Image (cartoon, rainbow, N blue to C red; front, top):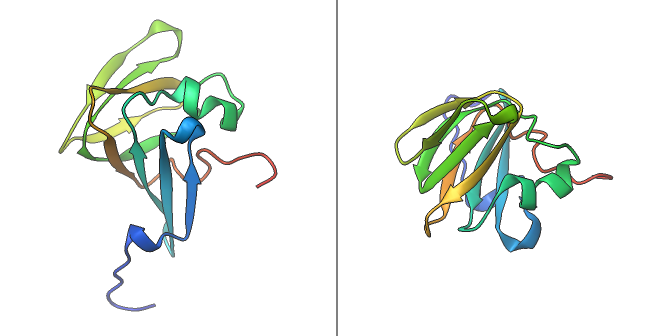
Length: 124
């Protein structure tokens, strides 16, 4: 293993587009697991733009990451806890949630845990 590794998401190992052209997930494979950078376009909502891909009623990924830009509102299943994350925020979100972009700016975030199986189309 190299002592220094530098990779660009512009040359991602895999790109997964969301439904309706509302963004994408770029993944880098590392020896410690996958790291993802997602861009959620204004109007993006998990239930509309990823649910048809995932085939579950809510997002079942456990997310741990950092918000680069934009804002995302997250609501846990069953009308439970909810909150908003934005630029500069570290976040951890447990499985069982919906989320959507707040405002007219894309939300860009990095995730070290929850994107490996995120938005995988059946048969992929």
